[in-house]
Image 1 (cartoon, rainbow, N blue to C red):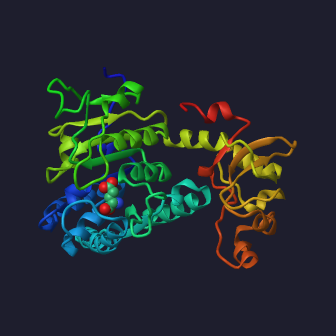
Image 2 (image 1 turned 90 degrees about the vertical axis):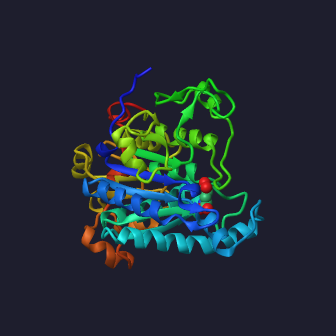
Image 3 (image 1 turned 30 degrees about the vertical axis):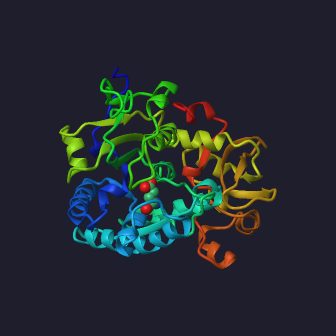
Length: 385
Ligand code: GLU
């Protein structure tokens, strides 16, 4: 069933690559340097083609275990937190050194669950990611395992990577692990299991195929990969599950020499995100804008403080607010880049005045275009949702 068409890796704009622990860390010998070197070369190749790359790298706990020479078997929470502390610093260094051989700068980001689930922190984290990418750096991301407790954690990097992909507006998420893709049944249990190359939609039947298997070094099995697929594809991001075992897995997928499972995106990242914003139930405030700003918004621009005539309500940065046009009707909605008090201070003022008024540099936009949906023309903006 080939209902959706699969694009080559190289024709994507922004790719999140999730790397499973077992690919990077060998239980006995520690870091698999040769594999890492090959992956860095492939990342450099993608970047040369103008593709932005973010890496979600597992391996902190596994590497820490190996450095600390901990015996095999399950770790207590505090032991895995300590192992992660030791492993993460080594992992980050390895990435940084390896990418630097291609003149690529790496930046480490350690996330806790709230960083993607709470909107304000989500915006903050996204801003950092965007800034790093603007600077041409490659974010190396992991869960902040040293402080994550059992209740407040992603727990697996598959879902973390999917949240990162949607946060970064990526159009492709590649999950590399020791699992090469989705089968109609767990292949080690069922000799008739068929490999699926294209998954047009994650239906209940597809979910049932996932089973529950996880490899020893990582937490994620097929279950968490399908969960990741649901998060990514519903936000317009395609997903590939492939084996990362060969030295150049990305190249092999691209050449068609390695098989992989491709999950079709349900829309485009922009429309899906805007659908999410438009779907907010109760905007926390209102920004009244002048006719000039209204025109600018209709023309696809961000909302600048200069165009805001009045601010109503109490809200915090990252909350959804309504943008009211000249006739007192809602023309758009968006996530405000400022708290209500700050918005009042800078309303009607030029971008150049913001720093003096607030005492810090601030952002040029009151609501960035990426965080806004035109509600008056909602039908056009939310297609493909
Ligand atoms: N965050 C964990 C680590 O770096 C890995 C989680 C996973 O394997 O999914 O060790």
